[in-house]
Image 1: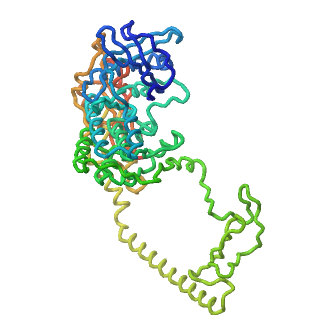
Image 2: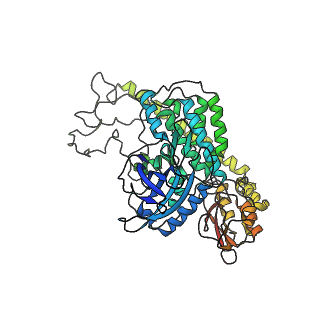
Image 3: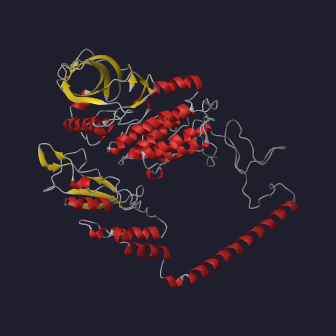
Length: 565
């Protein structure tokens, strides 16, 4: 969110039935504007975030936004900006459309973005000790939110406030999820949920997210604090998303030489492409940050390498669509180079000039003529002496003879290996895979209602021949049965309940939870090697979606096969 940016459309108005009087515009962004306001009932200053009218026209968004705000209001932590109230109001001159708003704690300070820009101007980057302390407080806030099932989805310096006493405050919990979680009819041009520079690979791929997605964003932010630049940056959001999925970030110490190796390892783990290779929780990452902070020399100022600039990230997204052109590769004979006149050259190989090596220089800006091909590694040009030519021919004959001997040896060794393995009746690795699947009762989906009974064997064959290896299930990702047997209910109708969030949980644990509550469900499988086998990828009832009626509704789950195809 930009400070003091955008047009102040609501200043001087009030929301909440006149309770909150909007004063100065504090900042504006793609989704909302934030005003300093006065609570006329409690006589205190608050911050009021008003959503843009385009978002307020969606009934499904307003309901989801209200539920998210209520969930965040229950989050109480010293490093989280508190939410006091939420609702919607209508302003004259805006077409009469509803304007959702959130009343938050007013933090007297400035965004972390401004603090970072100041440190970059003074030192080139933020001191390592200071950066680790800030990130530790951000992780403390995320740990509290993740325990309540709230994923931030938009961690960045602009959503972190620093008070005058250097206390860290994280804000904007739940808003990105409210926009992203199912408002399908919104078609505002250029609207981006979240910030591309801080999106996790799974967010860039449009997959489901969990707490580890926030930890990836924290890793990006920590990299930026330590180096004064982003790990991936490009001219287009598509190129940035491609870089997050495909490219490896540099080590922070390659830009800021004062960053110790332990912090390099910390950032590398946080920025792992596979969520399973990152920290398992915010608390685990926070402990590692605190340990790294204890190994960092106090008071060390950044030492940024001069001339080190951001790479052109995402360059591969162009070559994935348009084949790359190598400007140093010689064009076919007789072909003209683009925007360049045809080179007038004779037929046959060019002869090197006196005193030059075998590689000639291009003339008049054209391409160098390829040298004549020779089987001899050190053969002389065709104009050499007769003895030199004869010696090259003898060496060629020796090379050919040696090649034939090697080929015969390889063929004989292959035949011997096939003969020794002839009595195994197929690929032993595939046989072992099939035996494992037959003896493991936990991986047999035929015991489940609606389970698929035929996909596992096919996946095992692919894993046996080396084309596709199954990623094993993670049985530690469990869910408590009480989440199903004692769910949250609709205050107006106790028969309607909220379905827990089963995504990225192990299916065996989810199945036990559903059976304990006696809920109807069916299961479908989807090829997915990013998550382990039996990991729940999707569900048709979201935790913050419409209420679930166990007497007539059926829960539909999609689980991963562990294979990429």
